[in-house]
Image 1 (cartoon, helix red, strand yellow):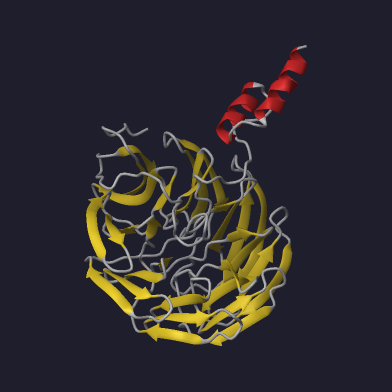
Image 2 (cartoon, helix red, strand yellow):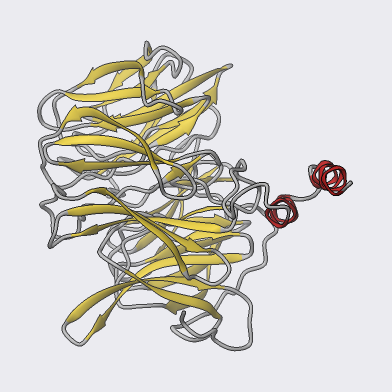
Length: 437
């Protein structure tokens, strides 16, 4: 009887929301505390979020003001250093990090509700690679599909993609390409359509590959132009077909995600790009800063036509597209808006400071975080920009903010004596700061 009751309860649990399902199954002893489930509407499963373009789920209510204490639900120390953004799936927050003294590279998991560290897995015990002082050995963002986590590191002269289960166990590792370090490595993996896409652009025979998410087997691969570049891949459905868009290495190219074959290609962009392109459904946008500054719009109908271009420096922070407008945060601290179809400038506003983090948009609000830890909250419409607030958390920020489930997650660094300490901070509605775990 007890067994039949348990089975009936389990059947009913399949109709419950994900969090309730986890609780019921765990209470029955049928599964461990970590249950694989696909990312939900309140998750942030990869670089630039669920829609891959920095747009948070509309209608969320989040604080518009905070500090190191105000509206802080929790704050936890993060060992090591990294520029990757938080990844949020279910009841976990994941981060890539690097112990620069040891050269080790790891993935960390934190409890989403309390910030307490759940587990830490060393993916590579040594071999982390970087040169630029603003770069790190963990500048990529973890991607997750609910079953597995995927992370890419430049280590010991190669780019390696690794898959972990939700409990932190390494499932497989795939050496994608040799890697010649120039500044650092920052191309986050993309999991979409039953494939994991990894890009390893560098000065000597770079590579892009599609991997089997279950085994790490190579589904297809092709060489990239020999040039240093840092942009992450993204897939957009344009003109009736999926297109894997890659920018940088002096070209903009669209590949068939299923085969790796070229759909269209256009000489342009710059040698080095950092940003991940966005689209208005007709065009894709390239931006970069070496050896020249530019923002450019390319027709994605197969022609690769250059519709417009300007000389603005949006080198590191990725762009936003909303309501027919392209919104950019220039590296030198200027917010700008252009008509997405024509490139006509709509407005500009000097924010001050330097920016490496990519902005996030929630409804008509843009959250842009500077390297000094200040997050500007800006109301942006096609007609005007209105500053709402400037909030500081920590002393330094290079990682892009995340907004999901009515909370804001920030990866910041503070100075403790003569020591730099990274922290993961959760901002949410509350009358008082929660104690640090």
